[in-house]
Image 1 (cartoon, rainbow, N blue to C red):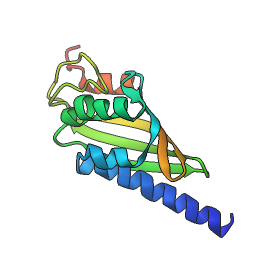
Image 2: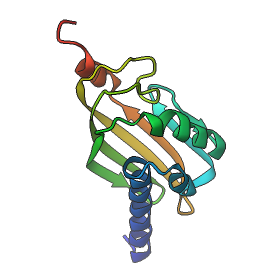
Image 3: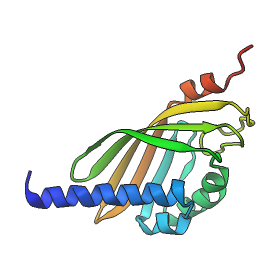
Image 4: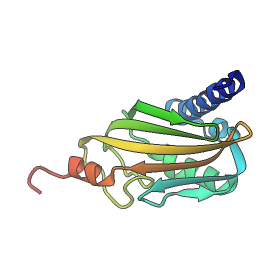
Amino acid sequence: MTPGMQVLMRQMEELRDRFCSDLFDRADADAALAAMTPGVTVAEIPSGAGGNGIDEVRRYLCEDFLPHLPADLTRTRISRTLDTRKLVDEVEFTFTHDRELPWLLPGVAPTGRSATVLALSVVRIRQNRIDSVRTLWDEAGLRRALRSPAA
């Protein structure tokens, strides 16, 4: 790997880490959006939440995502793989289901239960900006964790 490629890949990692920190640690939609291209696509799979283009993604982040993050949400990166255009993170999220999660489990009322869910996030980067974020959530595992013991 050339030194130039190593620098590029470090920049990609820094961009992704700053983006995640802006969203999950600071709940700063404007800072997160500044890291994205105007034609960005965000997709939460399987819920279908997200948006195409900066205006839809802004609405999604400000209305459906950030106001609905669980109060005790923590994230732990398990692995990261990248090449010169894409970065893939495997992340474990832990939280108490203390509010509705329209971006993750639309229509499911808060259960008050603790849950851990795995996610894979594929991020495409173009010209040092995020062009696409697709996150695949383990919805079946999450639903099992939130199910009442009697169910």
